[in-house]
Length: 167
Ligand code: PNS
Image (cartoon, rainbow, N blue to C red):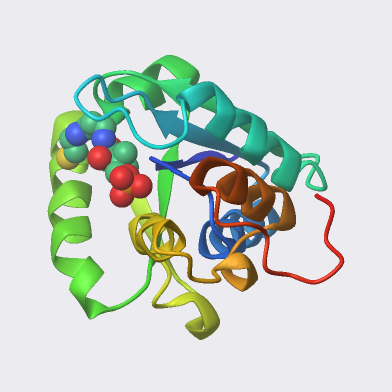
């Protein structure tokens, strides 16, 4: 069985994340979406909320589960019996750092990283940009799963811009 991890901060999860997770779910037997618990970075959404949102938006894929981890990703992979890391690449600018991390992780424990190119529709989407635009009242709801857009609107108080939406 091929068990992979999609790691990240997911503060909050975007449609770009979901695109990569869904495609990984189609390629591998089991996908664990693992949220980094970073004591140095509080984030807008507490880790538990991010996990709840991720569970809500990945519920349609029976081979996807959600977890959190502290410390090194390679140690989490070893402990959970995970064979590979799956990362999305939005643009060439992502590649430099992702390659460094992939090589470091491989050097540490031999775990491999596989890259999936993000769908072009989401190549400019990041959680930090989405939060920044939402904080100033911009509409980012088309870049987020509905449940996440509603949760972000609740945090930023900017309202939910999509007409007729309740969740
Ligand atoms: O969504 P992000 O913030 O881009 O995700 C980055 C993440 C969590 C995948 C990366 O920072 C990570 O793996 N952190 C865990 C600590 C670690 O293993 N660091 C060494 C990387 S070579």
